Image (cartoon, rainbow over all chains, first blue to last red; front, side, top):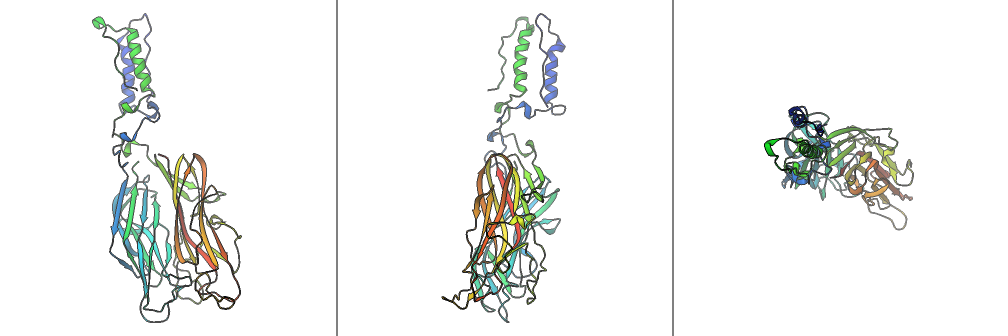
Length: 214
Length: 255
C-alpha cells in the first residue's frame, strides 16, 4: 500500500531539515517502484478512462480472421483439415482464446457401386477444433455431429447420387489452457462415418480468433 | 480537479515557515493518499501488463445441486468467460446389431417414445449430463452473452402406411424436438420446434442483461413430443432423440 504521511510541523517550533525532508523521503520511497508503488488506494474511483488505454480505439484485442472461398472435401474417417488459422502465440495460464468457425457445407455425395448407403449407421460427419501444439494437432473442443442427409429418415438415394444441401456449421469454443502453451495453429477438422463412399464439401470457410488484451 | 500548484508567495529571505510547509504538504499528501485522478495518469499509458491480470476459476458448478463442479472460467477486468463441456470421444458405438459401422457414441441421453423415461415437459439436460449443459456463475452488472451447442440426433419415424390419410412422407411429421436456454429460469434462446432433423448440432446464441449476482444459473433444456399412432413403420430408427456432446459458454461483459 502506497499511502504515505507527513509530519505536521508544530507552531512555534523551528522547522528542521530532517522534519521537512522526511515526508518527501516517504513520498519518494512510496513511489520509486521498488519499495513502493502507486496502488489502487492512491487513485480515485473511475479515474481511468478509455483515453488511458494504449489503444483507445480498438481496446487492444487481438482479432484474427480467415476467409477462404475455395472448397475442401472431407472424405475419410480420420480428422482432416477443414480450415487452418495460423496463430503463433504462447498462451499463458491466464490467457483465453475465443474461437469461432463457420464453414459452409454445400454438397454431400455417396459414390461407388453397391446398395443404398446405410443411412442410420454411417451417414454423419463431424467437426472438432484442434490446436497445433509442438507440431502436433491436439483436440480441444468436443466433437459435434451433422447429418449428410436432408430428409428425416435418412439418405434415400442410391449410390452415385449426389445430395446437395446448403448449411452453415457454426462451431465456437473458449480455449483456456491450464498452463503456458505455445500454439502455432488453430484448426477446424472434419471426418465422415463412411470413409469409402461419402464426401462432404465445405466452401466459404470462415474462422475468427479473439484474444482479449484487457 | 486534482492538479497541485504551489500557491503561496515566496517567502522573504527564503525562510521556511511552519504554516507554509503544512499547507503545501497537507494538500499534496491528501491528494496522493487516494485522490489521484485522471489528470495524473498518462493518457494511452496503460496496456495489458498495467492491468490486474486475468484469473482462472475452476470448480464452477455444472449441476443445480452442485454435485458436479467441472466448469472453468476466466475473469478479466472488463469481462469474464465460463465454459463447460461434455465430450463424447469414441467412435466405437454400434447402434444396433444389424450394422457394421461403429460411430460416435453412445449418446449421453436418449429420449424415446417406446419406453418413456422422461417426464412430459421441458427437461433440464443437467439431469443426465454431469457437465456441458449447466453453469452457475457469479456475475457483475452488464450483459450476459453466450452460446449453447449440443449434438442431437433424431430420425423420428417414417411412414403411416394405413389410416386416413396415409402419410407417405418420410420425416417426423408427428414428432418435434425443441431445445432451450434458460437464465435463472427465464427463456433466453430456443431452436423453436424442430421436425425430425437427422443428425444436427444446434448452436443457440443468447444475450440478456444481468445484475450483480453471486449465483446466476444458465442451463440447456429440451422437450420432445411423439404422436405415435398405429401402423407406424419406424425407419431407420424408432422415435428417439439422442443427445451427444454438449457445450455451454457464457461471457459476462461488465465494462
